[in-house]
Image 1 (tube, rainbow, N blue to C red):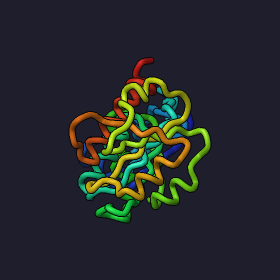
Image 2: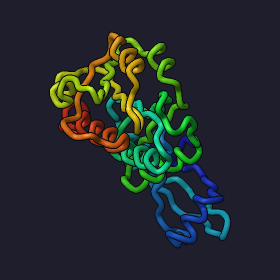
Image 3: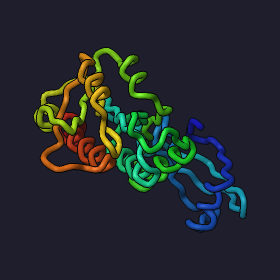
Image 4: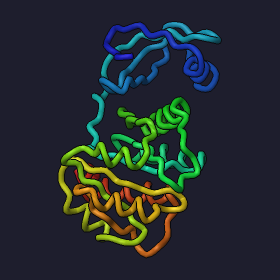
Length: 231
């Protein structure tokens, strides 16, 4: 829902429960709202019941934040590990999360509603005004076949590549990072990824990292060297 000054908002379900039962919101209390379109707004509680809350939007506090054009292409992992990946990617400022299905993935489906709930909660806890887009899972072959011209693909290859820090520091323009599953990529997948002209194979150092750790660490490094952390 797109917010605007003077709009009346009715909340029910989990959102109303959170405001009334957890935050103990009462009439005339101030509430912060975000719509992932325009930004962060100040609202005022008009009425508060057990199952619904009526709010009036007052004024814009912050416009929706700008985020770097960075996509995290992450192989699906076990549920708890992928939950962590979603949460931390949101905190780090990833614009888009593209789940990928590879031959060694232990999962091939993603609960979209659960994923949206995770990134929303992470954004709320960190006062983010922009949610990452969560794409539907796609097979690795289809991802490569439809790759966007002009977007650099940094491939975290366990067999090695250019040091990630130097590759990221030299990069400009739209970028993406491809992280594999628990069992890594097989030889055919690795060959296919490296064959893409947009690919830059990178090394994440001398240690073996779990899938979620690699995704979080590499995303943070990219944000520091090529993203918006230096602004």
